[in-house]
Each structure stands twice: as C-alpha cells, then as structure tokens.
Image (tube, rainbow, N blue to C red; front, side, top):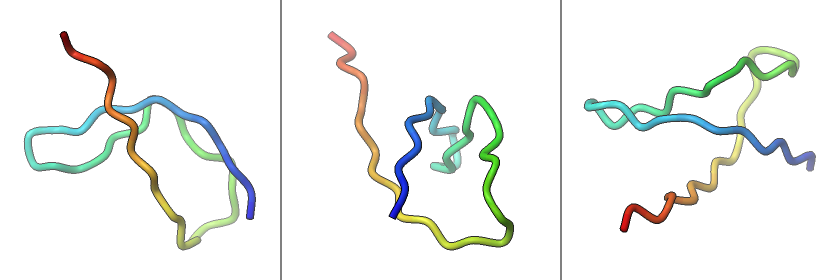
Length: 40
C-alpha cells in the first residue's frame, strides 16, 4: 500500500475535492482517511 498526503475540500454535497490531481493508474480503488482541520 502507498500513501499520498494531499489537501482538499468537502463540498456542500459531501464530496471530496482534491486540490491537485493524483498521478496514479486509473481507474483505481483507494482507501480514504479524512483528518479535519481544527476550526476553533
């Protein structure tokens, strides 16, 4: 398994939008772990 650290945004529909493209073979199934930024 490889790991890529990327930034992105969750839009109003709850979809993840990455700030840049992943350079991986397509189509590929991925595992996503979401870390929320502290919004205090």
